[in-house]
Structures are given as structure tokens and as C-alpha cells.
Amino acid sequence: MKRQRKDTQLCVKTSATHKKQTSLRERYRRDVDFRVKKKESITIKYKTDLHFRMKQKET
Image (tube, rainbow, N blue to C red; front, side, top):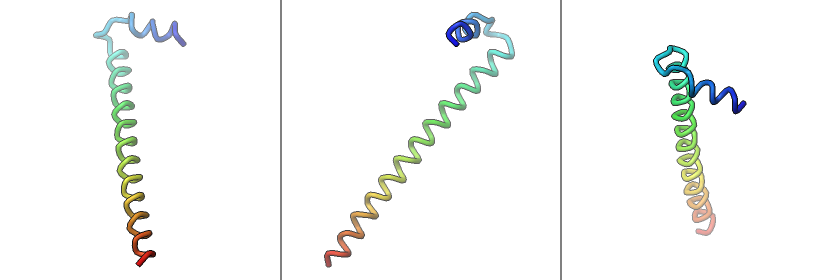
């Protein structure tokens, strides 16, 4: 695995394969960031909803 990674770094940056790889990596990173943000917003919404329900039960 490490050897392969070194090879990709050593290869000429102008080659199409390298460009493709970098774009894929960027896309993956963005996708992960988006998922994390989405998850956080969902959990926050759920927590506030739960809090609201508990308050309703008390009254």
C-alpha cells in the first residue's frame, strides 16, 4: 500500500491519471464532510425535538 502511494506521488503531475486520482480524492473528502455536517444537523434537530417532547409531558 505504501509503495503504491509513493508511486502516485512520484508520477508526473500533468498526466491524466494523476489528475483523475486527485479529483476523486477531493470529491471523496467533500462527500465525507457533507455527510458529517448533515449528521450533526440531524442529531441537533433530534435532541431539540426530544427536549420539546419532554417539556410537553411535564405540563
